[in-house]
Image 1: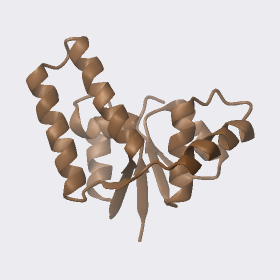
Image 2: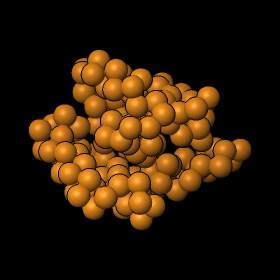
Image 3: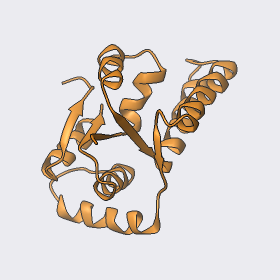
Image 4: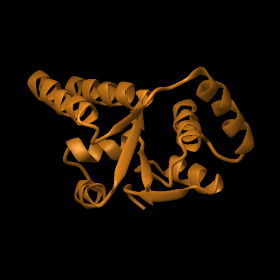
Length: 146
């Protein structure tokens, strides 16, 4: 079974029209199984709230998008993995192993969860996440600006 982990930067392209959305949609439809973590759920809700504050989305649009996202999890279109304490502890080891990379805490957490599952591919639109995943010998599908 081919399993892909989607970070929030890439997942946003599935629900919101932005640069790379078309390519992500094509990729997503070709996948056998895709997964996210509890962290992704929280980050996606935060992203929607930020877009609402910036007046890029209305309250109704946020409610509808979040409901669709939750439905995709319930229907197992997105397989949900919980964050566990060991993931938090292991994220510090990933940060330590990549001293030359400006890896953020939550991205390190995504990487440790993806390693633990384990997945075949990580999908991201974040350049630092792409670099970090490659340094950890993970296959990356990138949907950001080069």
